[in-house]
Length: 244
Image (cartoon, rainbow, N blue to C red):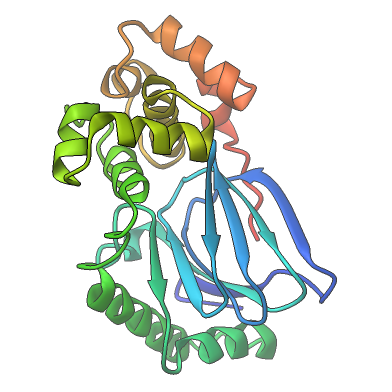
């Protein structure tokens, strides 16, 4: 239910949930209360164990899968996401937040005071966890960095040095997990950022293409079409947006 632009949603009726690629104008915090959740963002698969949640900033195209019942979300309008991470982030959830989101989704209340309290708890959870998120997984760190700043200049050697591993080991990890080369995986992350920017910003397609690392809008459009099945301009008009 909604209040002050916030809304809480229970996504299924106990038979499981599979949703194809879509995006939201709002940010989405999703969690599985009684099962794990799997989210796919381009070629990247994120497994969210039961009891943990995943924050998706506005406009991020994703597909999701929940098992059994118990998948709920808190949707946060873009103008209220200033205290939440600008990049995809997982977080361990404790305390009253999971139960509160579930109650809001099931009760039908639109009381803005209670929804605001849920947002405050989410902001606190994100702030308390942001320093340690994804620290154990180099690919999650890289993906979060690139989907926040696609013009990040660091290459495979730079990233390997940050994690104190060899470039060859990092390349093998990318290949094992995603079946891709560094170049193709990195390019896909930039396109995921571009899809988000098309849905959430007023920047021109040319500017988005340049930031994503493409020399020409036509090259960007061709790559975007291969990944998302439509032109950037069509995606902008209707960015796969199912709303709940």
